[in-house]
Length: 85
Image (cartoon, rainbow, N blue to C red; front, side, top):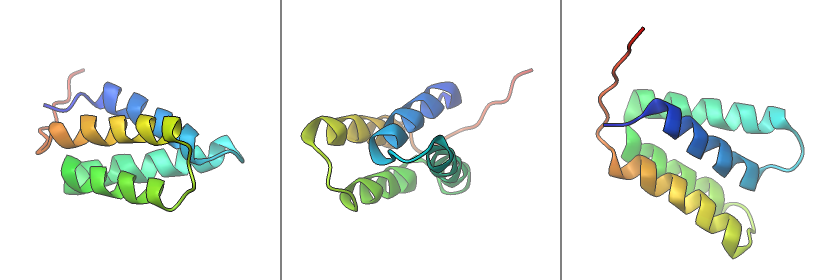
């Protein structure tokens, strides 16, 4: 099962490795990945996260953080969304 709170945390950590210019870029990236999770599932999103990382020249430490997010999301796919109020 995919814990959406933890997913969002992992996505934000990954986003901060990719974008330096503004939090708006991070917001848009996190939003797009979260939408992809909801529409296509965790494995597809993990691949997309890895592709985002590959487009940037990142140091090993940053790549590791992004890979950790991708692994977390991929290992919990397929997802089952549970909404509680």
